[in-house]
Image (tube, rainbow, N blue to C red):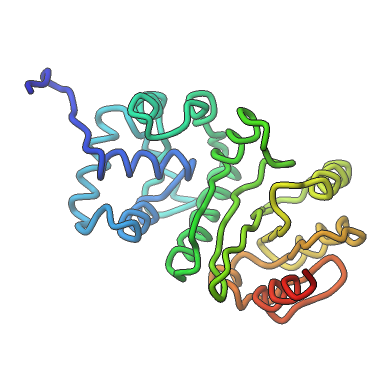
Length: 259
């Protein structure tokens, strides 16, 4: 097959896997993209990946952001052309056409990059079985009748001692208003699709502030610090609405015993 000069032929196993990862990450640094591609077995050569990324940028499928105050490496997001390419090949849900655009302010970019670090830490640990991104969660909420009560940052499925555990994950970098937290408490109280919740924060000050709003909740909600979770994962010390646990693994075990 002949291609017009300046056109591009994309490979399903590498180019589309890369575009799909950028779509679901929202924003992703070049270092993170390399880690994702290696962990998923899509790439083994750093040089080849760098060439692939440049090619996708040059043809308008990816947008490159230079944000030295946030990350030393380039940061990438998907363009409308990149989203259309994935949708045309049924590599992602059609709802992405209206949802792929991300707020490019500094806080949103940092939130996405930090969430990528959490995702990668779980992949490396070997306990992650599924990561449902915020885009997939929002699509399920918008286009199906079995949506979640809230647009979570992710819904993750972990394997613990042979059992699969589904957890709604929230990464709270900045505090919200008291009215908003009261609303969120009500949403989680009425959640029927998932019964375990993990809130991660940049530090214990924010954790303490947010935990206060959940003090009367009887749902299985656990609060931890993001940097500790990336390092220790299931062994991270967490707090519930009324009690503290030595580790998330202990908290999940206590929940299982309670039925």
